[in-house]
Amino acid sequence: MIPGPLLLIGLPLIAAPVVYVTRRWALLSAALAAGSSLALGLACLRLPLDAPGVFLGLPVRLGQSVVVLGRELVLQPAGAAGLGFIFLLGTVVFFLDWCIPQGRLFSPVGLVFLSMISANVMIRHLLFAVLALWLAVIIAAFTIQEDRYDSVRGALRYVTMHTLAIPPFVITSWLLDLYVENPENLAPLRTFAILLTLGFSILLAVIPFQGWVTAVAKDAPPLGSALIFSVENVAVFLLLTNLMLRHPWLLDDPLLFQVLTWGGLLTTALGGLMALVQQDFGHLLGYGVLADMGGMFMALTIGSHREMSMGLTLIVFRAISLVVTGTGLSLIRKQAGGDSFTELSGTARRQPLATTALILGGLSLAGLPPLAGFAGRWALLDFFVPEHTNWCWLIFLAGCGVTIGYLRGLRAMLSSPSEETETKQMNSEPLLAAVMTGAVLIFAAALAFNPQPVFSFTARFASTLVLFLP
Image (cartoon, helix red, strand yellow):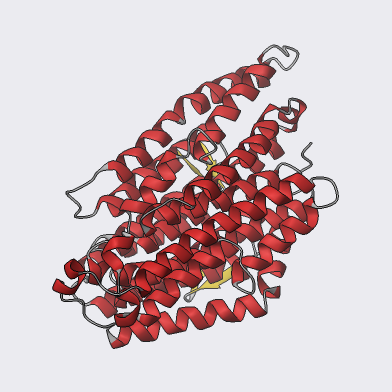
């Protein structure tokens, strides 16, 4: 009987070197990477945790715990739902890597990244869970950097900021062990709150720790950005809820949730304002993500089942928007050699499908109706209207800022090509890439007009988390 933790951590690690060796055969490499991720995603969502199941003809028990180096790893219902979404998202981006290449290391390193995220979700000890996330960040840095020699800012900021988050969690873990032995001593409670607030603020990119998001969006492969931003949000969310479930007395001090509330407001405002003045699609993507993440922070601090479901819904719809815009941006960067507005004049005429994906994905990220991201944004506004009308106006205006940013980019792409752009040999879209881009657009459109599957999934996901926040 194969324990679930060994399967979810081990299979991606086994598949990664095989995918790397076969990278010369793009279709085979993509099939192996996407197939491995798809199999694990379906296993997390469909196999029972409390009974034996069958995975590729082998007996497995997903909910069986294992002990590694004295630390317990076990897959809980919330972790199974989260990893199911993560692996299915990995399936999509690994398959798109076949016809829209993201770099020679993207798929194998991506599999190792998902393996470390799986360890993070299943480890029951706070410090070791954070260290597993840190290892995932270091591994993802190779995907961000790839073969770039002009800039190391994205990978460096990503690793540096997450490294700065380690000390608060190390001290918190040590103090937790002391508190468990002597629960009558209430002195460390405020220290716990301050350290956890600092650590989670860095991981969630709350102002003033947001710089790594825009740097990664600029330097990373666009589909890599979609994977990193979506997967890490789910992992950190599960880390936070698991910590509160195991130590509910941490809720006695509301500092963390107050910081997330006001930090979410500032993050939303900054994202929308800065999106107005960007001159390239990389930074615009990063600020669009920040504007959307701020609303998620505010929703999660409420703490009821409905608001947690809403926060998860925002993550899922953001992932869909990022995949769509990342597909278009990847094709345009490959042909134009950059993503600044001045470099892309006339691009829309040569690459209409890629331009459509880039702009519609960005507008979906902004929450513009009737695109996919609008469903989650409308649910968020509908909840905040009765008691927090000012928040609604801020979220709405931030979305308008992101929308204007992408419309400015579209105007540049529709303009007549400059002399510098005309000298570049910009080819039309490859047939296979155009077909895949069209398929991504159709899938996103289907979810835009029928978002119920997403709402049903996130509602089930939230129902596995019995958490009462202030």
